[in-house]
Amino acid sequence: MSLRVKCFPFGIQAENTYVITDEATGFKAVIDPGYFGEDVKAEIGDIGSLKYILLTHGHFDHFAAVQDYKDGYASAVFAAPYGESYLLHGGRDNKWLALGRGNGVCPEADLFLKEGEAVSLGETVMRVIETPGHTEGGICFVTDTSVFTGDTLFRASIGNTSLETGDKSAMIASIQNKLYTLSDDLTVYPGHGNPTTIGEEKRSNPYVRG
Image 1 (cartoon, helix red, strand yellow):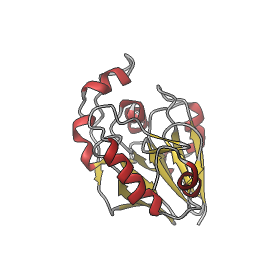
Image 2 (spheres, one colour; image 1 turned 45 degrees about the horizontal axis):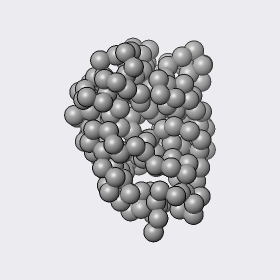
Image 3 (spheres, one colour; image 1 turned 60 degrees about the horizontal axis):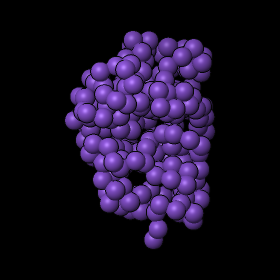
Image 4 (cartoon, one colour; image 1 turned 120 degrees about the horizontal axis):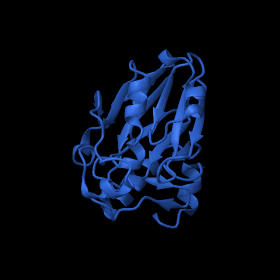
């Protein structure tokens, strides 16, 4: 299995939008659709190749461009975390995260994802794990070679837990009990900033110990 990952760090809050491609089939998914542009359209290519629009959590900077993808790729399935209903329907903090560019409400999802479920792109299977902390219903997507962590785990940092539905104790537990049990060599693709690995964060992340 070979997975190509292209990052577009151009969202409202410098959020990373990822376009991933299963190279065996050419099927694609967008993870955290905060940004949409001609460069993304070029990476996606054929309209029918985009199978999923995936969201890790319910903050506006990560779903700001969902409607653009839904309008441009009508056959793609928009999948959101099951536990993020409150934030997806607005919330106080989503209004300021929008920076005046929207009302903070997410378009309705076609599918809601829970722990243990998965979505497939040909040979690439993305397993869902629930990682509350940054928000109450945040999730991560795990493949054989990578994990897309949204705003849960960053390179040498962790997500902000001071926003609505955030919980620092839950965040640490999610990282220690879910993410740090994954293979050390998995590449971590975070919602902001540069990639890292699970092993590197276990060794040196100053916010998570033990």
